[in-house]
Image (cartoon, rainbow, N blue to C red; front, top):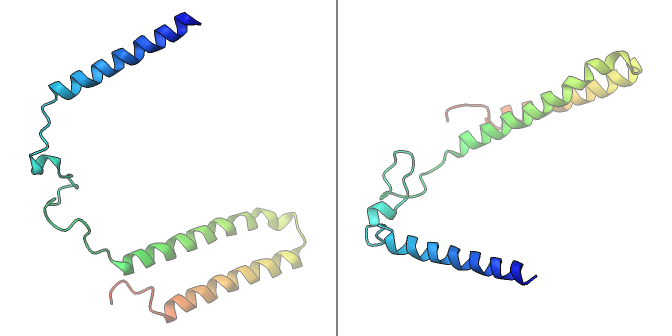
Length: 117
């Protein structure tokens, strides 16, 4: 037990020594503002950090994701056609497709599908 405690203590001391040596030998200067500023993919770091984001682009992305998930929900309906009652399958499929079309009509009516304003 003493050997385990002593080994742990020695490892902690060695780790702290290496940490202090790295701080002493480091050439990093906190006075150089240009080097301490983040590099953002070619953008000038001295300009505004948050550039304006197109809300229209974000809404079109959300619409795409919603319809992408809906397509993923439609795919299992195709193989289930042979395994279930046709009337129930038709009712559920018809209801689901009508809900998608109502959502599409609402987005079209609100001019959300226009790429330019």
